[in-house]
Amino acid sequence: MALITRDVRNDFPVLDRKTASGEPLAFLDNAASAQRPNAVIDAMSDCYRRYYANVHRGIHTLSEESTAAYEAARETTREFMNARSTREVIFTAGTTAAINLVAHSWGNQFVQKDDVILLTIAEHHANIVPWHQLSERVGCRVEFLPLQDDFTIDDAVVKERLETLRPKLFAFASSSNVLGTNFPVQRWTKLAHEFDAKVLVDAAQAAPHQAIDVQQWDAEFVVFSGHKACGPSGIGVLYGKEALLDAMPAFLGGGGMIDKVTTTGFTPHHLPEKFEAGTPPIVEAIGLAAALKYLQGVGFENIRQHEHALCEMADNAFREIEGVEIIGPTPDKKRESSALRSTECTRMTSPNG
Ligand SMILES: Cc1ncc(COP(=O)(O)O)c(C=O)c1O
Image (cartoon, rainbow, N blue to C red; front, side):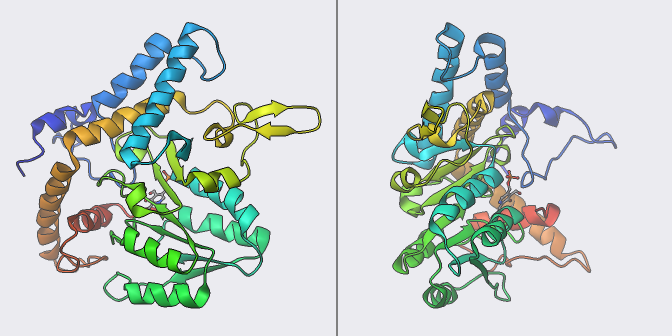
């Protein structure tokens, strides 16, 4: 357990407090929502203290500084995901809001009666309910890939379902919050594209644990939340391929997302503002950027190795307790993926959704 040192623990002020029994706090509920390091708290506090104002609409100094910081946060997020352009990075209220945006905007426009939306049975409710709601609106069908006994899904099964069902969209979590299973994003996206399906990747549980490369993944949409990645709550990210986002109608209407409004209609703004109606989560975006930089500073390889060691320890200890059944892939499966083992262990303490 050498890699993540006391310095990292010291970055999180909440870990100074003691538990009810007087022990130093150990917080294992990160999968539900992580704690924030000083870097995030300071960045947000600095904005509130020195330069907070609304963005994109004031011509005074504070607004210009806030706008610059908000757009710099978008650039940091773009770089974090390796998106081609900041036009592909939309700030939302979180993963749930991002999936709902896609289900409404893309779904209402491009999905028709009897079209299929394909999910896995290991999805969070945020990646199930919006598709049921779309089904209520347009009459599409929602189908689920079943899990095998070892809590994984073979590529052959994915291929067969894609071939038979010919879904319009295949939406799945890169890491399941229910089981900890890591699904092979790049391989499944390639398969889906062979059968003309678009792909949405729910990266809510991936963003805190691994570098995300949306160009390598090649999915049409990738979504994640700030609060699980040591950032603030109330902010998330929707990445979408630019041509597709351009072809989608605006979702929420209001200030900020319009180019022109008349008494008879409106013309939407260009990307990304088109999908950011109303005052956006300004300080939260600044906090998110600080969180992403913080994670990169600790280093995903260090994070991976530390989680691996923690999970090894937890896994061994749990298996010695009689009557405890661990739901999720066993450590001997997919050994190449230590993130799988780490999320598996996290899930034992924190099933949610
Ligand atoms: C895999 C996954 N998807 C989506 C969500 C929903 O995220 P949020 O509540 O931040 O919108 C969660 C939260 O636990 C999750 O684990």
